[in-house]
Length: 102
Length: 464
Image (cartoon, rainbow over all chains, first blue to last red):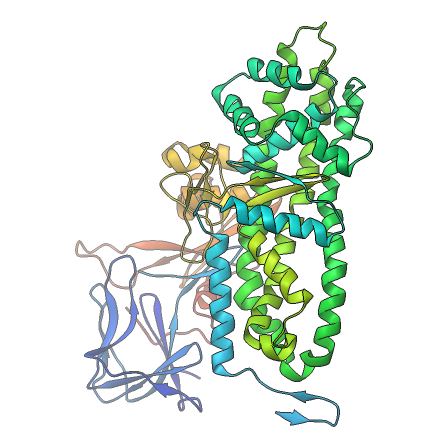
C-alpha cells in the first residue's frame, strides 16, 4: 500500500522509483510543490534535502533524510527518504476540472 | 520514418510543430482582434469569394456591430421589396424610435443609395420586385434569402474540397501522420476557435436578431393604418420572428465552420506549403488565403447581390483560457454600444456582472438555459449557492460531508465539505467545499477524487 501524506491541497504519494524519462527540474533555493494563487503561500521543501523531477504532466520529488514540507498555514510534514509523486487537489466543474489553490 | 512500399510517413519536426502552433496563435489573434477593418481589402476578398462561388460581385455594406448587421439585413430585405422606394427609406428614417436606428440608417445611406442597392440585387436576382406592394407573407418570405450563406459555403466547400483533395492525395500521406492531422491541428486551431465562433458569434447574432424584432415592430405599429406601402401588421411580423431568429442562428453557424475548416489546412500549408502545394502555389492555397482574410470580419451575412459585414468590436476581454470573460463589465463592446456580458465564455445577463450581489437562488433556479445557470451559480459562488439553496446532506464520514442539490435539466451540484487539519490562530477549524462529479456517493470517495486517487487507496498517514 502506498504511503500518502496530505498538506492542504497537496497530496504526496510514495513511489518505488522515478518513472523512466523523468527529468530533473532546474535547482532553485527551495523546491516549491505548489503556490497558493489566492494567498501567495507555498508548499515547499529545502532544496538541499529534496530534488524535483518532471515526467509529462506529473511531478515527483526525491526526499533525503530530514526533508520537510512546510507551508505558512499548515503544519510541517517530515518525509522519510525516498521517492514521491506530487498531486494537486482538483475541483469538478461540468465543463472542465479546475485545480484547487489555497 | 517508415516505408511500406507505397507510403512513406514521417513525424513532424519540432520546428514544424512550433510553426503550426505559431499559425494557431496568429489565427487566434486575428479572431480576437479589435483593430478596425480595412474596408477595401474586405470588399476585394468578398468579391473574390462570390466569384469563386460562381456569383456576381455583391454590394458590400459595413455595419458597426452584429446588432446593426442583423437590423440592416432585415431592414434592407423589407425595403427592397417595397414599392415606396426611396420615400419609404425617408419615412422609415423619420419614424425611427431612437438614435440607434437613426445611426443605422444614416450609416447605410452613407454607403449606398437604395436605387444602387436595388441595381445590385436586380443583377443577381430576377425576382426582385419593385412594383408590387409588400405583403406580410412576402416580407417574411424574403428572409430565406439568407440561406444563400449556406449555399455559398456549400459551393465553396465542394470547390475547395475537390481541389485540395486532388493536391493532398498525392502528398498528404507521405508528409504527415494521423497524429499531425488530428491531434496537433485540433489542439492548436479548431478547439480554440470553436469557442469564439460557435458560441459567441452565433449567440451575438441570435441576441441581436431578438432585439431587432421589437424596434421593427415598433416602426410598423407607429405607421398610420392607411399607409399601405409598408403596412405590415405588427402581429404577423412578430409571430414570424422566431423563424427569423432561427434562420440567423442556423446560418451564422456556417460562418465559424467556414473559418475553422480551412484554418487547419492553412496551418498545414504554411508549414508544408512548398512540399504540398508546390512553389507556384495553386487555387486551393489562394482560396484558403481569401478565407483567412474573411476571418478578419467579426460576422457577416451573405445575400444574393449583397453582403453585410460587421466591424470588429472595440473591446474584447478574455480569460486565461481565451474564453470571452469580464468580471467588471461588458466583455465585448462594439462601436454602436452593442455589448455582451460573458462569464467564462457563457453569455449572462448584464445585471449578473454589474450587480452580482443582487443575484438570488430563486433567480438562478429560474434560469432555463443550463449553461447560463451554471455561469450564474459560478458568479453567485458554488458554496454559497449550495448552502442558500438548502442542499441535502447525503453522506458523512471521517473525511467530510457530502451535499447534493439537484438542478432542473442539468446535472446535480454535488460538493464535499472538508475541514482543515490545521487549526486557525483562534483554535477553530476552517471548513471549505469542493465540487465533485455528480455520480459520487460518499465523502471518502469525493475527497479521494479531488486528488485523482481511488477511495480504496486514499488513506493519508498524516494530514496537516
